Image (cartoon, rainbow, N blue to C red; front, side, top):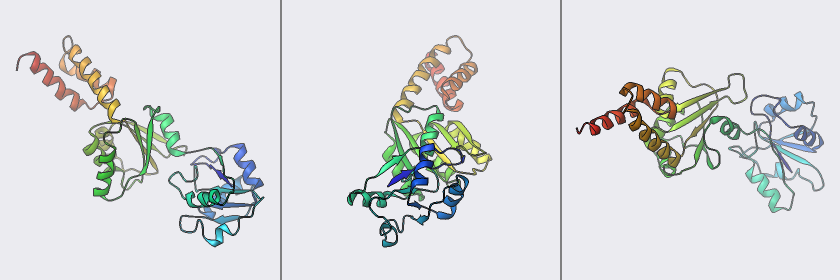
Length: 272
């Protein structure tokens, strides 16, 4: 069994090895055969498709089709199988039944987003989709609040603004990159603080598929300390407004937060 990554948008984002394995397969297990048939047709891959989704992964209609000594492939609608997509139970069944499983790497939305976000990638946590209900989502975010690594989420356009506001309430005004429609025609990256991005999407309705990448707690705190230390130095020679603009642009911080800190520093220096 090969787990084969397929394009997440641009149809050319598939490896030569993936095409080779798909063509050699006896059967291809697909999350949605209607969707996958378009990709296979484009690459002239004439292999029978078997529907394999979260409700039938290890049903008799699926596992009885697997014969030893033959090659099979598992694909999802887009990207790498099992990354917020079905496939785990089938792969686990193969492992438990001594059927070799090999990955054919390729496109993955959250990895692609990380590579372009401009946030630390030496350590990160992929959190997938947060719970849709406010209370459950808040509890999930609270459990992540003190994590120091970069946090990566997936979200639907209908819930994205609520999700960002929830993050702002729990995390504070962290640096964030929102990746929209990665590799597709309307691909775009929105970078800034959570408050700034909330303001933007309040005025521009979210449309498409999104990856939300948020800075971790430790790096945020360190950046803030560095920013405020530099702010105190600048205030000795710059006008308050100029110092605020320099720091907010350099550290990508909210001007409101920097301004409030600048006023406080000014008052302290004047003995107020």
